[in-house]
Amino acid sequence: MLKLENIGITFNAGTPDENEALKNINLTINDGDFITVIGSNGAGKSTLYNIIAGNLVPTAGKLFLNDENITGQPEYKRAKYIGRIFQNPLLGTAGKMSLADNMMICSSKGWKGLKISLTKKRREEFREELKKLNMGLENRLNDNVNQFSGGQRQALTLLMSVMSKPQILLLDEHTAALDPSNADIVMKLTRDFAENYGLTVMMVTHNMQQALDYGNRLIMMDGGEIILDIGGDEKKNLTMNDLNEKFKAIRKHGIVSDKMMLQ
Image 1 (cartoon, helix red, strand yellow):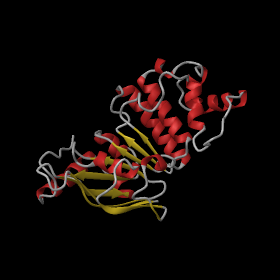
Image 2 (cartoon, helix red, strand yellow):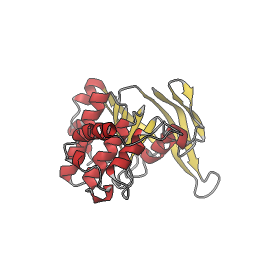
Image 3 (spheres, rainbow, N blue to C red):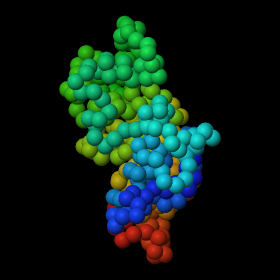
Image 4 (cartoon, rainbow, N blue to C red):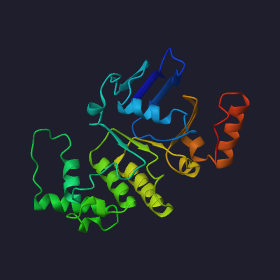
């Protein structure tokens, strides 16, 4: 369980460029949650992810993972249990290395100082994992990853992230750069892996239909704040019209900025 208590961060404090990017964020992410996160550009989604991943240290508040205070823990230490997949499908794999070598790096995570050999048995294990993608990559272990399509590379990044057994997986618009067909494939894999492996997932998306169709919770951010958190049956039965009505009600009370739009 990850708990954020009164998290805030201000950039360029005390200058004309001062920006309070996050304000008093209180959020509990339970084991097994699949949370979709929506909001306009500048709402604070990426800043929230960077604080969770350890790229940024908040100027206020604390983070706890399983009751351990990790507020000041650096990114390289959190990488052992917090995975992150970015929008660019080229970022999650080493293009000039073979598929087998990429899989070796993934499987070697946590084996500091130990040399792991690519044995016949391990190659077969990799093939079995790659079959889950249904892309024929199990027959291309010797090919460099830069020969694969963007959809194949993003699916591979997802698989390798799952194989590393993260406690939390952060998906940062991980299908936005893909064509609709590949985006659909990667989203279905995301759902299957989350369900089959009991993953805890946060997924930022600008695709409102994805936000409705996936996950057990939906969070809306605006102006550095969480303005809506819907879960359970309410989330399950939520429609696009419901979401727009909730947005209009919030906006009527002046809680959201003019740039926040639902599409």
